[in-house]
Amino acid sequence: MALIDQRILIDAPTHVIWDTVSDPEKLASWHAGYTGVSVLTTEKTGAGTRRRCSLASGGKDVIEEVTHWVDGLGYEYTLVDGSPYRQFQGRIRLQAGPDGTSVQWVITYRPKGLIGLLRDRAGGQRALTAMMADSLRQLRRQIDTLGVRMDADYRERVGMRDRLNAEERAQYQRRHAPRASSDPAILADPALALDLMLEPEPAAPAPEPDTVLPISPAPETAPVPPAA
Image (cartoon, rainbow, N blue to C red; front, side, top):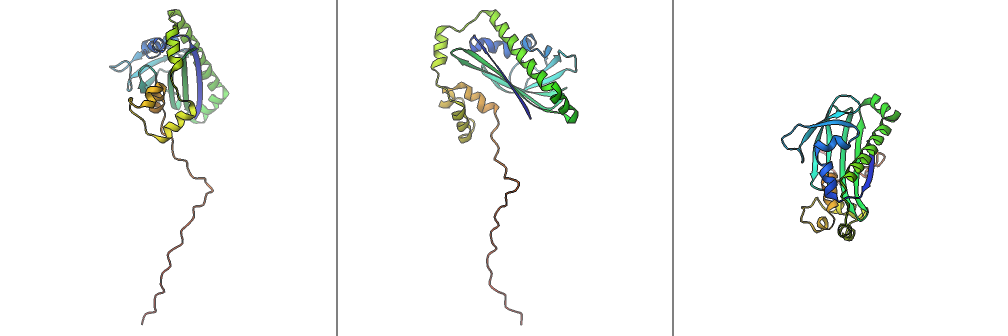
């Protein structure tokens, strides 16, 4: 499974960026890989919604389905039709800090067949990475044109927020099942809610292939007397 992680820092409040990245009608304005997007479901946003996306490369349209949604923080989606990949998942996540809002875009995918794997190694992954980077830069330019910047009060509030680091967040996931929004740890770090919702529970480690499990000896039985 291939993974691509792209991030960019934008000097704007989280809700301003969210208004753009969460709106499917604005997706083609900053997504370098799409030229047009049409919503296929009654609801425009939220888990379960679908959208048809026209590719800039001119290939077959793909259909995205939003699988997880945390309003104001991020969402996760997958390609359900027209995808050249065996599996494809993407995640958009926002996190505010005193220097600006970090926009993280993570894609995990598995090429389809041997030909798809060869194409991916020959330049497909590099092209996908470049497309993501160009898209985030276009998103920043688009947000910058709005002229909305973080004020001093906003920077102070997000700077004083008590956040869990990566190690503490991972330990929190291992010790507890996903929490409701009233959990104190989630209230202290709203990004934790996105982690708990979007990231699957860690699977139990599989035994080593060469591990030989001990066999308990059979219980001793009394000898059976010969038949008369």
